Length: 124
Image 1: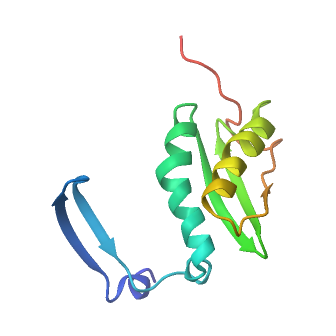
Image 2: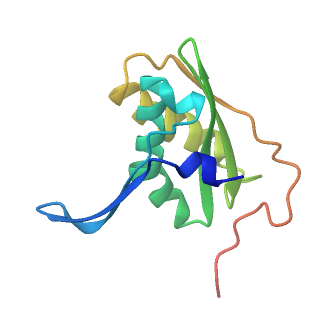
Protein backbone atom coordinates (compact mmCIF):
# COMPACT_ATOMS: atom_id res chain seq x y z
CA UNK A 1 0.00 0.00 0.00
CA UNK A 2 2.80 2.45 0.83
CA UNK A 3 4.63 1.62 -2.39
CA UNK A 4 2.29 3.76 -4.47
CA UNK A 5 3.28 6.80 -2.37
CA UNK A 6 6.97 6.14 -2.97
CA UNK A 7 7.00 5.48 -6.72
CA UNK A 8 9.12 8.00 -8.57
CA UNK A 9 10.96 9.06 -5.41
CA UNK A 10 14.67 9.72 -5.39
CA UNK A 11 17.05 9.37 -2.46
CA UNK A 12 20.35 11.19 -2.63
CA UNK A 13 23.23 11.79 -0.24
CA UNK A 14 24.30 15.44 -0.16
CA UNK A 15 27.34 17.05 1.39
CA UNK A 16 27.36 20.84 1.24
CA UNK A 17 27.98 23.91 3.43
CA UNK A 18 24.80 23.21 5.42
CA UNK A 19 25.94 19.72 6.34
CA UNK A 20 25.55 16.24 4.96
CA UNK A 21 22.78 13.69 4.94
CA UNK A 22 20.12 12.00 2.89
CA UNK A 23 17.56 13.98 0.93
CA UNK A 24 14.35 12.35 -0.28
CA UNK A 25 12.59 13.92 -3.24
CA UNK A 26 9.09 12.46 -3.39
CA UNK A 27 6.84 13.77 -6.17
CA UNK A 28 3.80 12.13 -4.52
CA UNK A 29 2.90 14.87 -2.07
CA UNK A 30 -0.22 14.37 0.03
CA UNK A 31 -2.97 16.85 -0.90
CA UNK A 32 -2.31 19.05 2.15
CA UNK A 33 1.37 19.44 1.25
CA UNK A 34 0.45 20.59 -2.27
CA UNK A 35 -0.63 23.89 -0.70
CA UNK A 36 2.53 26.06 -0.54
CA UNK A 37 1.49 27.67 2.77
CA UNK A 38 0.88 24.29 4.40
CA UNK A 39 4.19 23.02 3.05
CA UNK A 40 5.99 26.03 4.57
CA UNK A 41 4.19 25.48 7.91
CA UNK A 42 5.31 21.83 7.87
CA UNK A 43 8.88 22.86 7.13
CA UNK A 44 8.94 25.31 10.05
CA UNK A 45 7.42 22.70 12.37
CA UNK A 46 10.10 20.18 11.40
CA UNK A 47 13.07 22.54 11.47
CA UNK A 48 12.28 25.00 14.27
CA UNK A 49 9.33 24.01 16.44
CA UNK A 50 9.63 20.26 16.97
CA UNK A 51 13.30 20.30 17.98
CA UNK A 52 12.39 22.72 20.80
CA UNK A 53 9.33 20.90 22.10
CA UNK A 54 11.15 17.57 21.79
CA UNK A 55 13.33 18.63 24.72
CA UNK A 56 10.15 18.32 26.81
CA UNK A 57 9.13 15.05 25.20
CA UNK A 58 6.60 16.71 22.90
CA UNK A 59 5.82 17.06 19.22
CA UNK A 60 3.56 19.15 17.00
CA UNK A 61 1.80 17.88 13.85
CA UNK A 62 0.08 19.83 11.11
CA UNK A 63 -3.47 18.54 10.74
CA UNK A 64 -4.88 21.04 8.22
CA UNK A 65 -4.53 24.50 6.73
CA UNK A 66 -7.51 26.41 5.43
CA UNK A 67 -8.08 30.12 4.70
CA UNK A 68 -5.28 31.40 6.93
CA UNK A 69 -5.99 29.00 9.78
CA UNK A 70 -3.43 26.40 10.82
CA UNK A 71 -4.80 23.38 12.69
CA UNK A 72 -2.25 21.58 14.86
CA UNK A 73 -2.18 18.55 17.12
CA UNK A 74 0.25 18.48 20.03
CA UNK A 75 1.42 15.25 21.56
CA UNK A 76 3.79 13.69 24.01
CA UNK A 77 4.82 16.12 26.74
CA UNK A 78 2.74 18.88 25.10
CA UNK A 79 -0.52 16.97 25.45
CA UNK A 80 -2.17 18.13 28.64
CA UNK A 81 0.68 20.44 29.68
CA UNK A 82 -0.44 23.48 31.68
CA UNK A 83 1.74 25.73 29.51
CA UNK A 84 0.36 24.53 26.17
CA UNK A 85 -1.55 27.78 25.53
CA UNK A 86 1.62 29.81 26.05
CA UNK A 87 3.59 27.49 23.78
CA UNK A 88 0.90 27.68 21.13
CA UNK A 89 0.18 31.42 21.13
CA UNK A 90 3.48 32.98 22.20
CA UNK A 91 5.72 30.41 20.57
CA UNK A 92 4.34 28.48 17.63
CA UNK A 93 1.79 31.03 16.41
CA UNK A 94 4.25 33.93 16.69
CA UNK A 95 6.90 32.07 14.67
CA UNK A 96 4.43 30.99 11.98
CA UNK A 97 2.92 34.47 11.63
CA UNK A 98 6.36 36.09 11.47
CA UNK A 99 7.55 33.69 8.78
CA UNK A 100 4.32 33.24 6.76
CA UNK A 101 2.13 36.34 6.23
CA UNK A 102 -0.78 34.15 5.05
CA UNK A 103 -1.12 32.59 8.53
CA UNK A 104 -3.85 34.42 10.44
CA UNK A 105 -4.51 32.05 13.32
CA UNK A 106 -3.16 28.83 14.84
CA UNK A 107 -5.68 26.47 16.41
CA UNK A 108 -5.08 23.47 18.67
CA UNK A 109 -7.12 20.35 17.84
CA UNK A 110 -5.55 18.25 20.62
CA UNK A 111 -7.67 16.36 23.14
CA UNK A 112 -5.52 17.33 26.11
CA UNK A 113 -7.41 15.11 28.55
CA UNK A 114 -6.58 11.84 26.79
CA UNK A 115 -3.39 9.98 26.06
CA UNK A 116 -1.24 7.37 27.72
CA UNK A 117 1.45 9.77 28.98
CA UNK A 118 0.14 13.28 28.36
CA UNK A 119 2.14 15.26 30.92
CA UNK A 120 5.80 16.17 30.97
CA UNK A 121 7.60 15.01 34.06
CA UNK A 122 11.27 15.90 34.44
CA UNK A 123 13.79 13.11 34.94
CA UNK A 124 15.40 12.53 38.28
